[in-house]
Length: 110
Length: 114
Image (tube, rainbow over all chains, first blue to last red):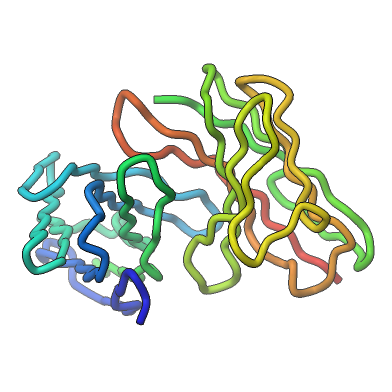
């Protein structure tokens, strides 16, 4: 069993839709949770960073962490074609390496 | 957050040769991380590079194949040695982002071995 599981997609939605991206994990020691966006032929770009459980909002993006269920989510409101990319979840224990999900490919069509 | 310059951005290399990838950060950082992203795959940590000490390699990666230098707090290199087509990947460096939280990545080096 992988430490972090992420549906690879692809996920195809119309412009303006609400997108939900999810990851599950098995290691209860994870404390730091991140979402990255990666455009084709580019490095990952940090979107959201969350410590422990709870919600965090930044513009159209909301990150949720439920440590009791070992489940994290990223919501994108009013999705735009420019949001088309691969979204990677990542997490770590304190002062430890990042463990990445496999990434979900998102396509937002006009 | 830190800005990372990574080069080359891409290269096509003959099997059996070596390529050195450079990573320059615009601020001093203690740890730098090197990742590999194989086609269609997620990121896998190769090693952690601390200034003034030997790099720490993850399981499945060895120093002879991926030697790393870390001469100062803003610079590191990763060499992919004796390359084979299986080494064709994107290689990325990363540093911890204390202002944003999380980790910042360079734009990556797309390596193709023929």
